[in-house]
Image (cartoon, rainbow, N blue to C red; front, side):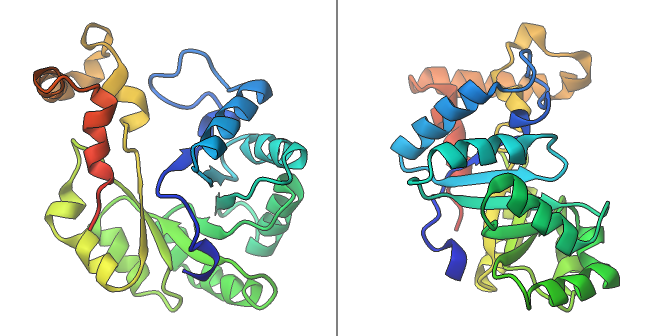
Length: 237
C-alpha cells in the first residue's frame, strides 16, 4: 500500500501509553520515560509502526511527545477513530496531538465503518488528507459487512492468536489477502494472558487453562521461550 509500504511487520500497541489496559497489567499507565525507552528500543530493532486510538486515553499525546523529541526517526502511525465526533474533527485532533498525519485511519468497529454517515464523511475527508483507510473487526460477519461498503478498507485489523485461529481456518485471511487488503493481527498475546502464571489466572479464564498448560508443555519440550512459540501466529499467508 502506498503510504504503508515501508511499515514493519511488527507493531507497537500503545493502549497502555494512555490507559491502564490489559488483564495482565499490574502497573497501570506506562510513564513517558518508559514510552521513550520502548519506542527507542523498537526503532533500534527496525520496528517502525505504532498502533493507537482516540479511545486509548492520552496515548496519542504520549506518542506525540516522543515524536517531537525524536523528529529524525521515521514512524508509521495507525490510529482508530470512534463515533464521538466527525471524522474531520478527529483526524485534525490526532494531527495536533501526534504532530503528524497518521498513515492509516481506522474505524474502531465494523458498525461505524459501514454506516452511511461514516462512509459519506470519509469520502469527503479523503479529498483533503492522504491516508489509508481501515477498520478493526471481530468476526467473519463483520468482515463481510465492511467488504460490502462503498469504500472498501485497505487495512483490516483482526483478532488472531494461537487460541483463536478461526479466521485462518475458515480461509477468511486468505480471502482478504487475495483482495490485496493488508491484514493486521491484534490480540496476539491476549492482553498478556499467555504470560500470567497458571496459578494466578482468574476463574473467568478457567476454560483456557488446559490449553495454556499444553502451550507451556510444548515450549518446554522444544526448549523455547513461550514468546517465541507464540510468534508462529504472526506468520500469515
